[in-house]
Length: 393
Image 1: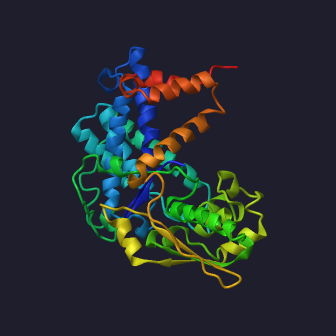
Image 2: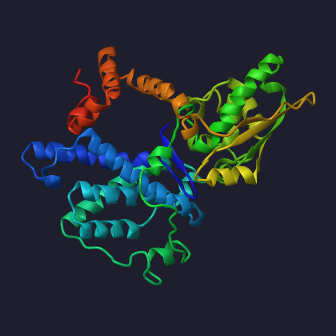
Image 3: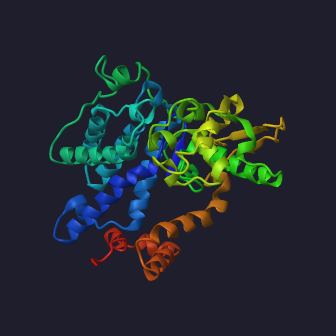
């Protein structure tokens, strides 16, 4: 239920916050107590946000034209590299030490995508990014203590990253580093679902209203065709594959769309074993009657740096032979093209997640702070983190 970046490689740049926030908090608390990490700096919220812009840009620009998934590697390699680069700077490492740390990140054994795909889909995908953040910080600390680096970690014949992991190809870059990624990143707002499915689920929600107006339900659906983009098919098209666990269900576009049609909702609890959706014969039957077909234009638009849309278009055929007008959704809520529309939903989501943990006064304090940029940016990060700590009962 986080942010997302979709290009030649996929990923969630906010994953880097696991390294950045923890290190900023640790450095600040250490220095308050007589330490001298990162040149004695006490980090502010602005410092953390600037570090996040840098990490987003490193991970996102690397992902624009370099596909790690096509060689079987998981996108968290880019979390490790981006976090290593940014944390090196936060710790006050020299440019030479930063290069050494980044080389260590590239030579470190990279995670494969095995745990994200059938028949091995499993919960490791939920902690893979945290693992990458931990490794990034650990490598930075090793270099800070004197560990060296490898100047040709990418290009060394036979033993370098390019030859070992990238079929001899070299990285391509589309643009200089700036703030493009943070400005265009996707916010997952509407549904707790893999991002390539967001517009498909929204289309199903819209179609439910049309079905209701016709006096029809999911039981009246004969089949569904989803006109989509190549990445959706590669990652979450699992029409006839068994749904063995939570990880299978939340990475199956057919399951998510079927759940929306049957229950007019899609919630995190719908993925769990034994849930109403997971045990529904109608969801399972309908899931197997939802077919994905690639539209080359949608794939082109997906990679277009000016569009970056994630289009899905559903066509529903009913048992009586009626075919409903195709429902097209090109950009999900949270896309740059729908940013203003998403802001109230993001705030509502923030409040919804704070509610079970804090009283109304603390929730209002956090919301007021978030709506006061100058005050928020100037706040020291350890003091900000303290606001999210509950006092002992």
